[in-house]
Figure (spheres, rainbow, N blue to C red):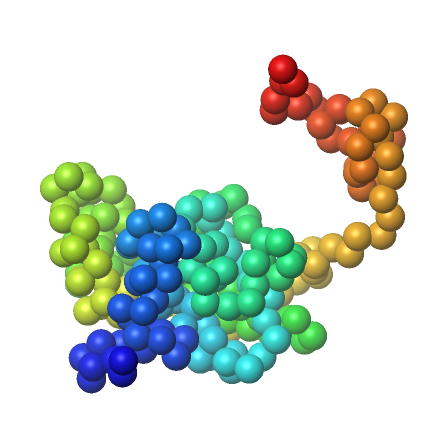
Amino acid sequence: MEPSASEPTLCGKSAGQVMAEITRFHGFPAPGVMIGAFMVDWAQEWIGRKTEADAIVETRRCLPDAVQILTPCTLGNGWLRVLDWDRFALTLYDRVDRRGVRVWLDAGKAAAFPEVQGWFLKHIAKRELPLDVLLKTIVEARRAVLSCREVVVTDFLRRPKKQSVGICPGCGEAFDPRAGDRCRGCCQGAYFEYR
């Protein structure tokens, strides 16, 4: 099914197709992931859709899912890095020359779309803003709530390569010996108890 003239295309897919993928992957039609789809689309357009890119996301909320849905960058393959800075921003960059683009949800620009700004700044309670109204406004706003600038990614965010594997003397499990003489679970304490 071809997208209508009024429906935007994001990374070669209609907004409806992207929303269906978001719902499947994220568990529900999340506004943050939909905004993230517009961000990824703009970043890919800027750096070139065929560029072998890595991604950096500056929040754990929603945005990493947009990157994983619309690019080959995932947490598992190491092409996606997530910084817990709680800024709704992402960078896609060429993994060879580290040149790329940073896109963020601009709170000032969002003022032109009160539903988006109210949702983003938590000025409107979820129960007071129907999800379908918010999603419709996001699709209408498209890139109008976003800002974008070229960047060069610094060395400290290069993808770490796994160099060796050690066996922890505390638990007997494999771990990265660069962390020390024991795994982090044994050093910092486990998040679980065996039953």
